Image (cartoon, rainbow, N blue to C red; front, side):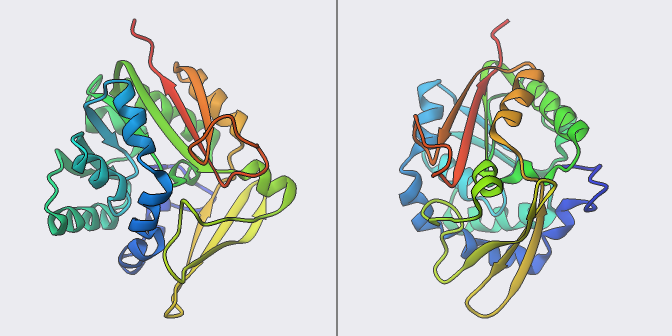
Length: 256
């Protein structure tokens, strides 16, 4: 993940062991599951996907949820602390993952293999950790190599268009829905979204991210070779570009 983030350093270093321990409280697994309503399971199932690479697994919510629903999931992240937390959560929940590993997106085909997975998911606003256009381009070209012909990639990100044009607001219905947890931008401009996360016990953490616009991400996917880009807003389409909190972008690798 983003080895060339010159503006912020290696983003996975932001995920300290302490922050990783708090992350599950931030996600709010039960409420998140209710909010998503099986969206990713239906999406992957509709394309007959069996093998899935979660390349931004965090503490394992999506990897574990998909594995519980019968998918063969390999969980990876750029943060060793997050991968370790995913392993702990999977063990605690009695869920078997196909594998776990630390993977840098710009080396994904080396670490995950070429044409290995039916689907790649990069969720939780993770792709916004890359601050350089070249790094984003290289990362998607690598993910293109990893997915099988006819397979899909799914990327989600905050609705930065609305945030930049109309100011920040969030319903917290789908992401960062943990009880008593607050998440908001301490700094926001066209080059930086510095989010602060505040927990009920007073603990505070910050993450620096790049505010990706919807059309730009779609164009990046197409430039990497993906086709038939479809966008959802908070898991629905059509959607109001100004009202939704998160955008889900789905694209496909040509069959040949």
